[in-house]
Length: 336
Ligand code: NCD
Image 1 (tube, protein in one colour):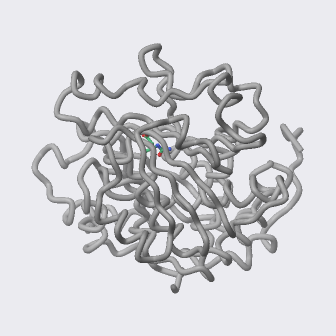
Image 2 (cartoon, rainbow, N blue to C red):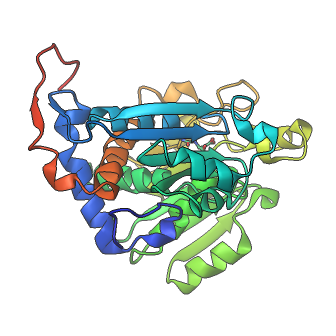
């Protein structure tokens, strides 16, 4: 794909070569993400960050990634602080806001809404999650994390065995990740969920046609037994008809250290897009895993900065100039 000037709406836009390019750019962002160097390559550029659904990581990491490249961020959060509550269409909002920004990131509760917005935007739009549909940048940072974690354990993506656990019906991160994994060979995916929260059948069929070995089970212990990566997800309660309905599934796919020790192979990596639901009736990833070095969830969240910096740099056409406009930091930086 041509990165420069493109909207990033679906993970389906990417081919293997694009992923390689993006990940190489992400690697090159480390000195900046680790605050060892500062770059001003996006000096004067403005990111419009529009989040119509709750978000911590995605919103803040998009903003920080843009700041770390030297750009400025303007943020709109929630419907109540936007003219959308006055009946303005997404297309009109896009026509206006694209005059104020150089790139826009957007999250919205409706499937297809970000594409709708992008259709009248004069600047590139990046999908930060459109309802249960897609979350392409999360899939990119998830795959980046999978590669890094596997390589630290002497493995690569070939013959990857991954178990996806939890709400596979409404979870947009697993939808995008499954689509992305179709680009790779010899991948086995075990889908572990209550039957009512299974991965959409069309996506399962598509994965099988693409050569992925897909198994489905509602038995957590069997599902995670042979995986290199266990990817846990939250019950997406905001997408259920009622909280009571979501309550029926909460806490059904709980992973803690004793389940890990009993059922996972040594060094199985645990991932989660976060937020993990730590309320006692859910507790999908117990805090007793926090000392387990294979719990990659915070490294995964950190990787979001690298991958989002890389995407901004590619889409705005400055990836080759990042170092040219850089210098060492003068202040005490926080980590190596
Ligand atoms: C996810 C999302 O919003 O889809 N979070 C994220 O972006 N890291 C997952 C979730 O909310 O459960």
